[in-house]
Length: 281
Image (cartoon, rainbow, N blue to C red; front, top):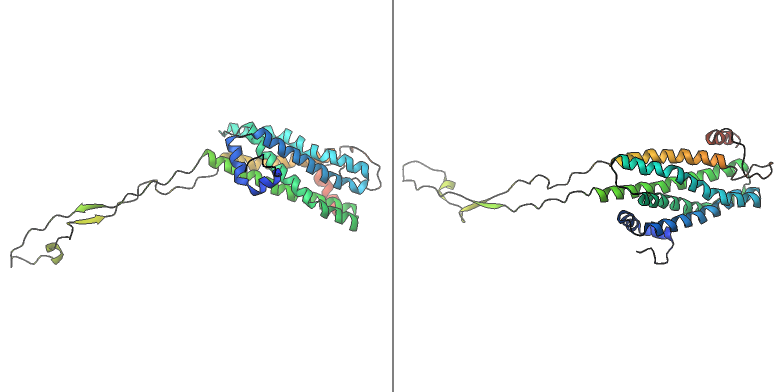
């Protein structure tokens, strides 16, 4: 499947994952692929941002539609150099274009899944208009979609490692070679009883002897690449940077009883606010 087949990029990611990983490994037309994924992500995140702000009027909806794509774009700009440089330090051949394409794949999956949850979010906004519940519902949706998207990032990195360090092919097993059997000397009658099998030669004069399997005939599973461990660390850093940036760019939903504001004063942090919201349910 090629990029120019007219299908949505998310459909290609879900249907042809192996083809996406292979294209990233070979660095074929990555600028176009990354551009398609980032553009699709921005549109999807803007749509979901409008749903987030819909509970507080059209001004908040427009503001959230702009700020949610910016949230992920700025987080990528902050965290992507760390992923690239860490892999270089530990000997990975990951290029900056490949790193951008891998992370863009994760963000595309995340954003499209968020849009898929938008009708559910709107349903609860209409039927159960509670600020604390609505905020926690959307936080849960974004966390769930982020987990799924980052699983795609892990799968892509594993595909990169397998392409860089393929398993050795098993060596062909040799066929058994016949070994000649010496003919027994004739024994005079009464000179002594010899073993009957020793008096009757093999029909072909040979006997097959199996050869042992050579070393390396069975591939040995490889250990995880060092870049995988760094990737897990980077995912944790990505999560902390994203949540703190979201707290800095708030509000996305808009607090009831307060007028529209593009930004709030920086105080507290995201995790304290989530605990406080849980106590208000």
